[in-house]
Image (tube, rainbow over all chains, first blue to last red; front, side, top):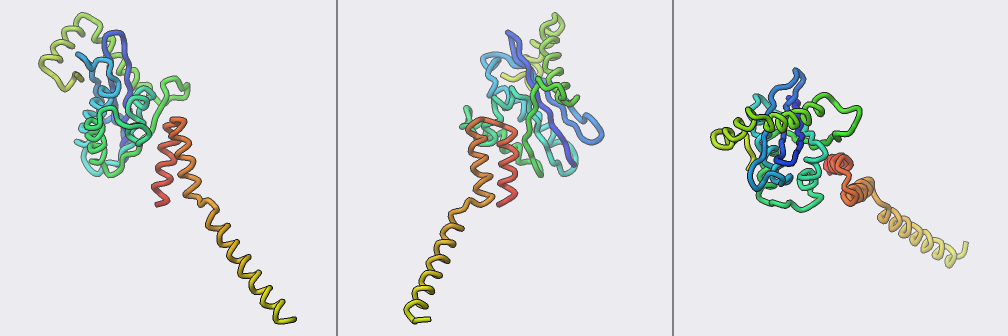
Length: 161
Length: 61
């Protein structure tokens, strides 16, 4: 079945957030967001690879043969897109190799991009960016701060470090 | 027609055929054109073009 994975990111002065959503003909199938912590907070390359790998693993859990269209926002493209299509050498070769290997789990994995500044952006593209901004805003509130530290300690799969 | 002239004509025809073959082999194929466009897209870091042309090139192989 044809699926599209939209992935976007946003950052403030404290951390970066990555959000993704998986869409097929029936609508949004799955979505999630991750926040960065520690030394990797602003490492866009590592963060983008980690977020994409987690998203791809979730996609792989879908039933049936999956033909995937991976749509990245311009920040993610700048960070890892050119590595994935061999335009520039990978910053972290092992991490990049892992991402490529996970991409091979699918029957087909086609790359595409979108720009956050385009006026004619699709709702899914806006949603990916908006979910990342929302995750950042949530983390800035008092309950969000508690959740963030709880996730750091207890739910490491929600945190990229 | 004298034999000499006939020989010269045959030799000339062969040379022309050879030149045409060389010209044909030097002409860029569609695949070469796409490969060149892909190299240009990579240089200017145009992600959409790189992806499109890579897929096109893969389809030609």
